[in-house]
Length: 199
Image (cartoon, rainbow, N blue to C red; front, side, top):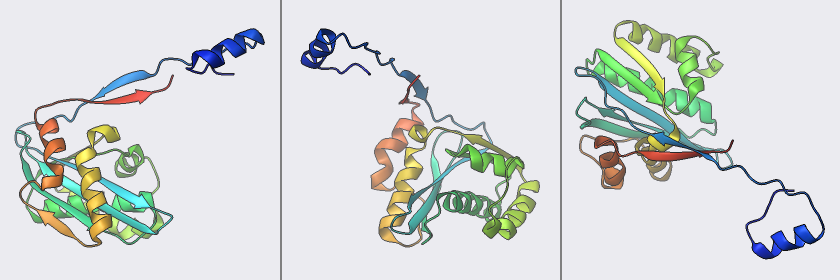
């Protein structure tokens, strides 16, 4: 039995000579959004999926090496599948980057599986085979890297994707939306978020 935080329950357990297992202190991880190198555009993408309601949305934010926002979007997908939505959001970012003529792209998301798919280490969802084939062709025309970030460092995009679920349409901005301001500026000046991990 794990120890409870109230003194009265602790005394009762002691009286009955119950062996107490003390909870370990969680490990605290500092999560930082890192600026891209000069000449690169960093794109964070993510999704929000409410599978019980059949709604999902994806979003992305494009930033330069100063941390300034170049563009962002939220797109409603009308699907219940989280991985499908994550992949679709990532694919959209690469297609938009190509359309805008970007050559140095750093894609970051909070799904290591999406990263594995793009690196060829995991299977592509069959519904997205054609989209991914086209996306890989575009990637070959760019300097491209992909990385993982914990969700705590990806809050801007979570907010964008949540907006997409509520609005149920495609929206894009070339200036920072009001609902992103606080999180965006935390990222820009490298203020950390914290993740608590049980040992």
